[in-house]
Amino acid sequence: MIIVTIERDGCISCGQCWAICPEFFEEDPDDGQSSVAERYRISGKPGEGSAPDRFEVCLKEAEEACPAEVIGVSPVQPSFD
Image (cartoon, rainbow, N blue to C red; front, side):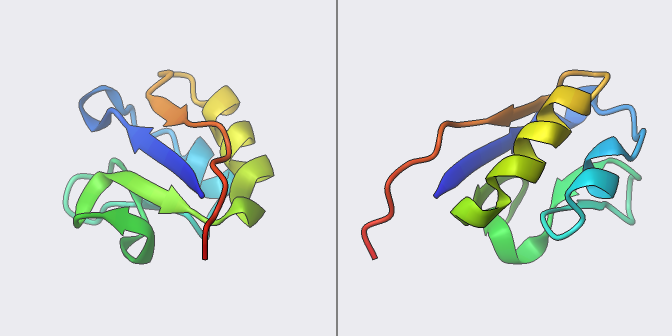
């Protein structure tokens, strides 16, 4: 699993992340900022998520493309399913 954080206070709503990795990131309809898609949120928090390994490439691309540098992607952690 991959842990992803978004420092939502610094989000400029450019849309890069949800354009690059739309299954994981989405635009929050209430404030227009980037959020983790509800199904991947940790404890319901829009700025914290746990992603399957299959998202590794697009998550890293979104992290690198974010002009506000508010996305953090942890290294892939082994899954013990």
